[in-house]
Amino acid sequence: MENKIRELRRQLHLSQEDVAHIAHVSRQTINAIENDKYDPELTLAFKLAHTLGTTVDQLFSYKPTVVKRKENDVFWCEKYQCVLWKRAGIEKRNAVD
Image 1 (spheres, rainbow, N blue to C red):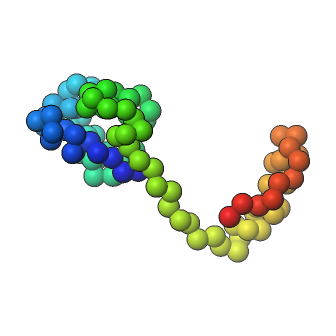
Image 2 (image 1 turned 90 degrees about the vertical axis):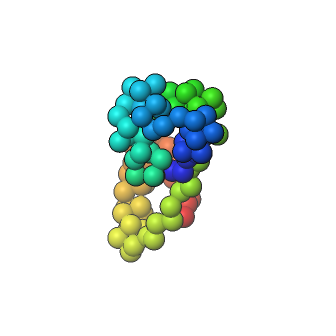
């Protein structure tokens, strides 16, 4: 998940330590989030957005990664999804890639 924390923090002349104190986390946490090594829980995401004067959806952007499916993945879907759908009381759906 990408974010604009560093950009907005610098515009506000705040250090990582400043943002960390306001959000009640460590500086290392802010560093890890800025460098896309850690995705914050929802509560922290809202705290950071509030601290930086923006919204969560403007601060963070999610880009799904493309995962190559393996033969076994397809087999698992065909074999077990139908069972899970039946347990949930849902009609069989077309598989989505």
